[in-house]
Image (tube, rainbow, N blue to C red; front, side):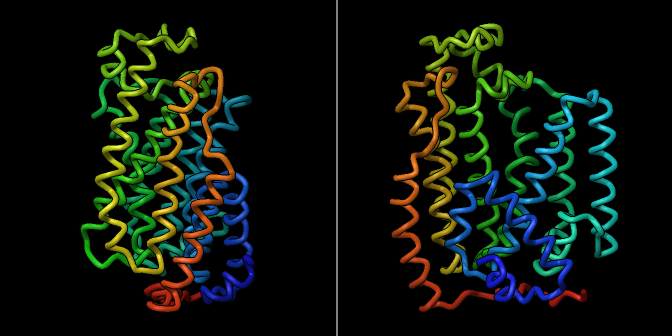
Amino acid sequence: MSASDLDAAGIINPDLRASYEFCRRLNATHGKTYYLATLLLPPGKRPYVHALYGFARYADEIVDDLASTFTAQEKADWLLTWGQTFLDDLDRGHSSDTVCRAVIDTVQRWDIPKSHFESFLCSMHMDLTTTHYQTYEDLYEYVYGSAAVIGLQIVPILEPTSPAAAEKAKDLGVAFQLANFVRDVGEDLDRGRVYLPLDDLAKFGVTRAELQARIATPQIKDALRYQITRVRDLEERSRSGITLLHPSSRDCIEAARVLYCGIVDEVEKIDYEVFAKRASVPLARRLRIAGPAWVRASRARRKFGSGHVRGLHQPTG
């Protein structure tokens, strides 16, 4: 399937194809729900979305993996060097890095602003040194770079019919991230981090020490319920943006919306016992969403075409 997708995207350079394939495997391994949603896109657009996911996941995974052998300063130094090399390569228009080669090609084809990657790298640096956020506004500074800009990077590939789609993509990206924070409270504590704003916790009489006790008290459940309301508000605000995308792209984002934001539904189903259980969208539900969406996406491609599957530019390499 990946070879036919690369053919459909007009990616013929062997090194470039290998880079895109590496990114696809990252996506398939580490982001199964996200990967399932990408299969609803026209084949010629999937490699570009895999490349952007691969870049974000690679940076995040490497930073976490370095934890066992590197000090915080060494991790920060590594990320600074890797990130600056990528930005320099982006200016040059080519890279020898396995992941970055495909990302830079994607950026060139779809005119994706460099600033989105600068913001992402800034948030990755924040994650190395910041262990909590006092207010939602403080958290948003991090989430903008770690999640909102991911939506902004992808929007050009989805061919919006209005600039308003970008703002909606930001809302959806933040909703995805906040849903993960609600689900992963215990795992984040293992890494020394609390992503739920401390001021929000304090509204319900919850302290960081009480979170670290890992008992889902009524107060903690109320605090999680409050965050879930925020996720759903952002999700609802984002929905109108889906209609502003090329018809062949809409079902991908609609499925991603339902499945990712559905994480908080699963948190409710386990009665907010996030320290004892991991909330996840069951495979049966994923398939119930993906099956009809596949049919709709196929019909949309037949009726409206697949958009500009080769991007706005032809690559030089």
